[in-house]
Length: 383
Image (cartoon, rainbow, N blue to C red; front, side, top):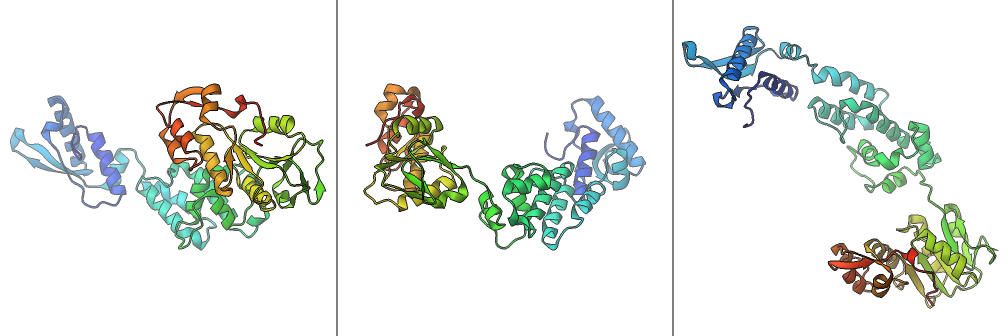
């Protein structure tokens, strides 16, 4: 059915109400006789519309004469009675008190975003996917935004702040885009549009996972003895890392099981410096990685061991950006064919891995190829 043509009066009245709430002043629809499925439905529509015109709710234009006279155009005549007739509250009457409540205790920087939210709700639209019925969720966004703007924000880490403010320690991780838009709706200068950019702007800490390492290292000058298979180093202690002797090589490992086996079974003499990346290396892992390599001469070889799949190539690419001299360890087409699983290739592999893994990327992009999870292989030293 073409737009603005209705075969039942209820749909037409609801559309009138929607347009009135959006501020339209002149609303008039042509009533097309051909839009009705049956003569009976046409008769019912015209009879009901005539009754509403007689009550002053609608106004009509007719065509034809006598028994052939039919309504050709309808317009709303009395908006208030129209809303009452269809049992619907005006958006302004619903939204007004809600926005007034949201504005309670607001600061000047919030006025623009609150006005934007009100405009969206008055036009029956949503703000960041949330309508007037989601006001409880918007209040949580508002609470976090106000807390971040407070001078005490930098006294807490991210999860403690969220837990104390809204009772959900992971709230910012799940809703950071909403909070970002609330905070910087009308700002001329904005931080990087990311969770990290948001936290750094307000000096709120995000506690990272400890970095697991194995090898000939010391913390704050205290050597870690060979009886310790590996150690998890907290974020605040990463800068305290030093070497008690030059490692024979540096090896980063993607998978926790493979890291554990390597540290326990292969690196027993602590000749290699082994780093667990936990998949894509976090900020903490990258910080430790750079710090460690800065203390070692360039002749110390550097390796990385990941799964032979598109994700593994992606991780290797990240490591290569940190250390251009890194080489792949146990990542080859031959190993994938002998120990891996057949699968369909992914063209995305072609853009990962750089020059060093180009042959492997081409192999993984084939229509029929193989992938290899590194846990399948027993750990062996790279040199």
